[in-house]
Image (cartoon, rainbow, N blue to C red; front, side, top):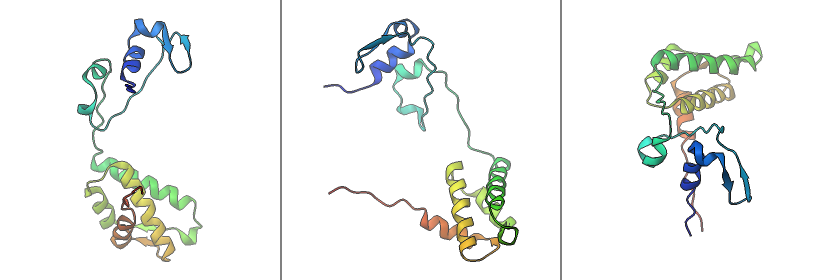
Length: 148
């Protein structure tokens, strides 16, 4: 039994076949020709060529240093808004520069900043330094999952 969703997706993305699309699971027929479909992929080369041919492709580049700096500043502003003035933390410029140079995507950058800030707050520190960054990177490592 073929369980691929590709044929159904290709039908949805063709305006003519989408006009009289039938969902086999629900047994319903409907006009899906005005449906807007968003697809994401970390590597477009893994997408089926027929599917790619039906898509308008936008490439999102890695953030530049100035953009990373803004993300870091925004995260710290958000964290500090939730803290009492006496508990607010600061980020030293060396640490910001290290984070900017690090090869990490934005999601990892944000989670590293958040985890590092928590470490600094828990330790009673008021200045987030490379020590907290290194410690949070160690604790953010994914653990393998296995099934018995």
